[in-house]
Length: 314
Image (cartoon, helix red, strand yellow):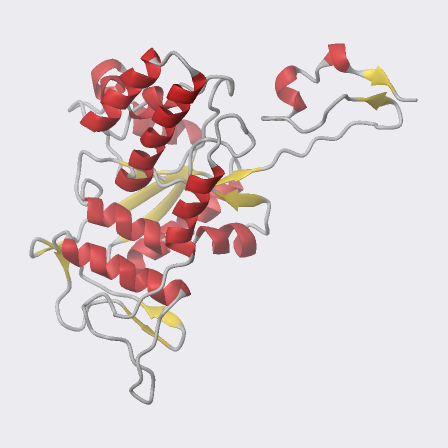
């Protein structure tokens, strides 16, 4: 889920943090998408064992999935029916965390409009305000259509619902793939990229030396500057400096440490919220041929089936 950081409320860190709390990746991938996908919390693929940092990725996941709250986001202590202090978890805790970060970043609701939690479900908010002004404009979440990409099309509906639960006027728009790409990469007549949020997926180049952090998020690769892949407009000085340090690194260990500093900035600043990936299942006739390995990043298809490695089955 990518944000247009050039316009509010996407430019507000509190909005992006709140959306990260509200999007239940484990529920969508597990219950809705029936485990054909798995949730992501770092851009480095876990299958790329040389570059992956399981400890950090798991810690970031735990910040969301193991969240606990003892207040309702407005500072009021949570109590049970007998007046005893209690701790909220799961969806309730996510909601209260989202409310808290929104309030801390200039958002508010009039009395009676704030979201709440009752009967084990979110009570949606309405008429959310930023700096005292109601955000009435529609927030559009673009995604590929269900015929092209049913997983992202479905996911966009849940993202729109998450934003609506907080009181935003949000709508998912699954659309033609080419229309989507033009909207998020081709400037309009005024020289702007006319989108709020979008869902797309990427291939990340050579797993031996991942260089996509520079391509997608370095300020110098802003789409409006040089037609680069950074169409969110993310331009963080610390991140930009780390990109140059990574490019100048002399050892794997040095590059590895720098990469995970970049990953931490991405997790914290959230130009993207990573959603999911899918495993690749490929079929071949095992009675006829053997492969020396069948588990590899991007599947054996990316090696054109590795014809030089195929042997007749014994």
